[in-house]
Amino acid sequence: MKKAISVLLSVFAFACPQTQATHGEGKQGKVEEEIWALEEAYLAYHRDANHERILPMWHDRFLGWPDLEPRPADKQAVTRRLERRYAQPASWTFKIERAGIRVTGNVAINFYTVHFLKKDEAGKEQKESRRITHTWIKDDSGWKILGGMSKQQ
Image (cartoon, rainbow, N blue to C red; front, side, top):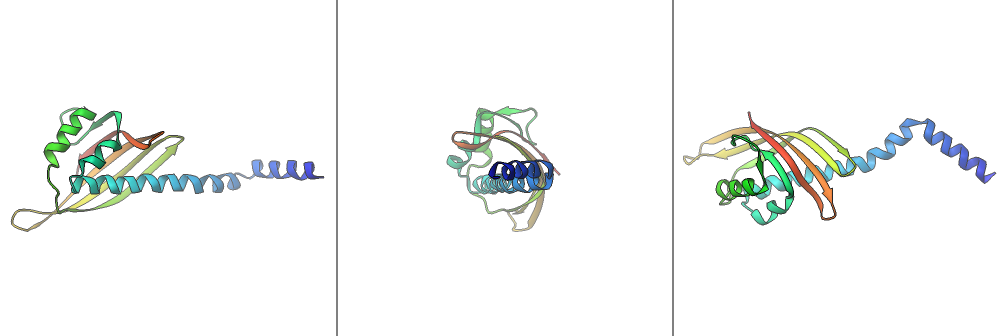
């Protein structure tokens, strides 16, 4: 009898995709939220010029294409850019507008627009937006940015 019930439950679970999707969405949603939280931290670390927190977020094999660069850059090149462009903490604020995310195993890709609110030297508010995509890969030390691209809007 126990074997028959077990077989019946297995057949039911296999035959009902809603059961599988609901089960998978819970874990999937948790990973997606983890990636979005990392994106929030990543931008805050840039604002705060916290290089010690940013650098470990990039995978050693990182390749990205920041919008102000003429070609893609590896981790060493973007580190130099970071030290030059974000040398001191800034006072801007930001808001992430999520556009999409997909997680497959230990790889995630996400797309978003980040809206910045900055003040110029005269104190006048300036708005700026960038589209960003990051490809994340998870290894033994956690999620790392393997690649990315940004475009100023």
